[in-house]
Amino acid sequence: MAAPAAETGPQTASATAPGAAREAIRVEGLHKSFGPHHVLKGVDLTAHEGDVIAVIGGSGSGKSTMLRCINFLETPSAGRVVIAGEEVRQRADGTCADRKQIERIRRSLGMVFQSFNLWTHKTVLENLIEVPVHVMGVPKAEAVERAMALLARVGLAEKAGAYPAFMSGGQQQRAAIARALCMEPKAMLFDEPTSALDPELVGEVLAVIRALAAEGRTMILVTHEMKFAREVASHVVFLADGLVEEQGPPERLFGAPQSPRLQQFLRSVG
Ligand code: ADP
Ligand code: MG
Image (cartoon, rainbow, N blue to C red; front, side, top):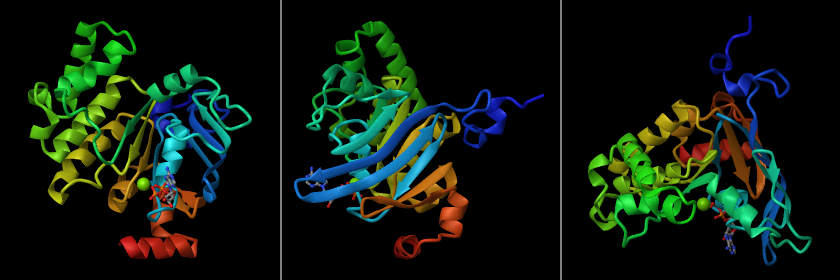
């Protein structure tokens, strides 16, 4: 008898096997230019449900641009982005044809930035329920209940009424993660979520991300925390100069890197 999918692990299942993990995010031949500056030069990347994909690479290699193209904060210059089987339609001139579709897809991807991005004039709870209540039409009582449960999950139940300015960076970032989770996203996108934190606050944010990974959430995590990437990632992608230079399981990428550029990068951050 076949083992349940939860025991075999989604990333070991083949695409055609019964119960195989479904594709959550697929990027094909992604290009992005800013004027004459060709930043992404044909990036391919696939995340199946339950995958934790760590994206590493030097500053300026295109990591943030790739994440921003996945949720259409930037419009790709060329290539395909498919979210849970749905391809975003674009006009030939590169502008997005369907704002409603973009907004729906963006809400299905919880994005967490380096710089928290909480609304400073709202309390933590107000930050969490704003979009569910005012954009998605969730009844307020239901949104509050869900928000309070998520705040408890990230260890911030006591901070529901606090304003961001009175919280540490680590607390603000945990609130930002809870806010992203309030949208019940299909996947989470993290862009260097601990880079703006004082070193003593990094651990509490990594602990929250680790717990999300352990519960099988799909995520793409851009990070400079190599030890953490090695620990939580099911797959690691090394971006260099707008292209995937090398990718594979963490043990291989970190333990036996093939490309000289990756070897050099790991020496520089190690
Ligand atoms: P990373 O996140 O890997 O450090 P980025 O994706 O932020 O890299 O940036 C890649 C390159 O694209 C950099 O040279 C950066 O200056 C450029 N870039 C990013 N965003 C813009 C923009 N909005 N306009 C012009 N250039 C940009
Ligand atoms: Mg970046």
